[in-house]
Image 1 (cartoon, rainbow, N blue to C red):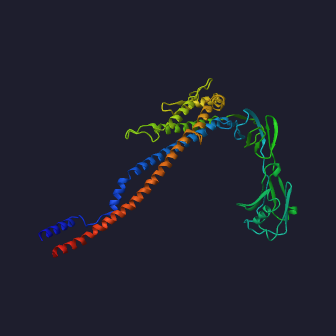
Image 2: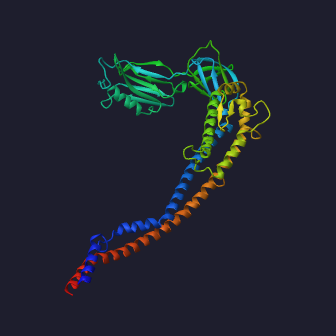
Image 3: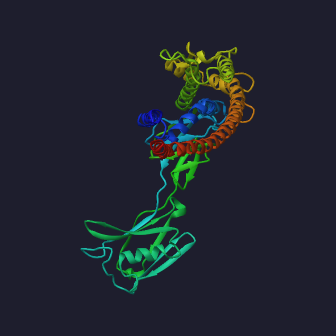
Length: 456
């Protein structure tokens, strides 16, 4: 009995102290085991995240290189910013002008004798107080003749208001040549008819025989052509925008003065060139800043950028540095000659005064420096950027392809490990659940043993 009672007491003590028979936390045990076995998965996921960060950084650099390539193309193109021309007038109140990049540089003497006008008619107010809906007497008619088109409008019950007549005119055979509308002032409403074409080609007449309508049409303006002389050559224009008289130059006639000769100078456009050059500097500095940021060491963490060990960046730096430091013989030998000064960090600082003076005094030399196909910084940069931005064989493209392949390989490894862990999880759940079931039966077994020992 003593031995039996001692055994029973020991088993009871074991169970009461949370030992056998209390059951297992299956999920916790499985989670702990899987966490211990997930070390390789964690390492691979960390490596995958690093590759994603590298891809993002390379894409940013690639986008900024393409932006730089665009600004370089604008400077080197024969129709770009450095080929732009400006037409400067000695009197903008008389005329202004715009010039294409292919316009010949010259000074033209222009006299604007008269402007082109647009023909129009209006009626007296129909009645006081009058509105566009005031009823008119029916039976009368009027005829509009405009070029090869004509239309007779008869006033009847379907159109016997000013608005009704305007609609009838606009829907008639002359609707494409003129536009009718109702205008209102302090005197009342009037029917107005205006030509859709300026100058003599748009002139038209309105005839109301015997004033049968009682509308009293008045013609304040006839359609006449503009009259001007360009370098002594008489010119007639149906509009006040004159193209083709001076090749690749458009004249905008703003006023007329037959006694004034306006000088229109067609010359290179320093303002447009300055904007383009500054934009080039901005995009170049952005690329340099991108590259510098990858090699800069964080004073807190002691680490550099995610691409600091990537040789691709050094290759890009070397090619850009070689191109930007291009030097040639002549008045414009390098970028510093036009006020673009390289700084110690590789960026460019613009000396605006030097740039302005060079463009004003020697525009053609600046143009040649960027646009020359034989020598010049433009050609050097174009070549370098074509190499580094090549979408299939460029160093950045190849780098991205390599990273993508490594990411694909790691993804396969991650998928395999995750699959194995899922199988392990299922096995562990089954195993620990079985153990737990046994442990949970121990109190019943204890009771049976105790009963047997007590009856012995």
